[in-house]
Image (cartoon, rainbow, N blue to C red; front, side):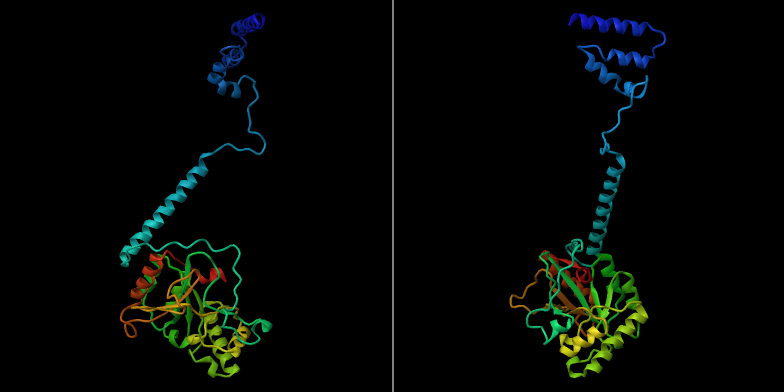
Length: 324
């Protein structure tokens, strides 16, 4: 052992005395001496790796060292979330809500299978692959879906409220009620709302012939395409009334789904389809474009009633089309 140490010392002396050896090389040489060698290596590790002809240490294949940019990106993302929540909290206070509406989960990567609700079938629907009629979306998530019918009331405050609170909803429109202001619903569409079919004139469809029903449904498809650039695949029969001809006509017009509703919210009360008089995961909620001429309040008043209940019960509002 003494021989080895002495040999290393002699080599060290020669290295130090040699005028041709760089300071970094000398330091690297020192690091090889036993006993205190580990301390020397720690002290001059950077010099050994970068100079004096020593090979640079590289990460093992497939491994990357931690870098600052991902950490900064994560911090920026967290900052955006905080800012968005703060904005929604401020909007909730501005619109008279004590609690901030809950944020819905991300849309499912795999859409649920939509089937007709039991008792809502028509003869031959499955054989003819007619659009299913349903009142809920099959999901275990605590979400509900807000749908608004007709188009009579065109309240700018409602558009601002829904945009500031970032509440998704679906509109089912009838031409005889929207034709005096197509632009109002164009603003709605620009904010991400899907505009769907509720017939031209809102008739009781089972009282019409197949051809008359088809004119009502296909005619509204034409109106929506002409003014809003797309033909809907979702249709709601007026009053929730339909027969086999209704669904056959809807299919002929390009319709794939015919949702109705499980609850209806008004400006001053709720109505329920189910015996327990309560919300359930995936429920479709109906309301209407109405104002003081029909209600004891405004559309923002109705939305406050809606959001208070769903938020207090732990539900978020999701976008219906994300599940179809």
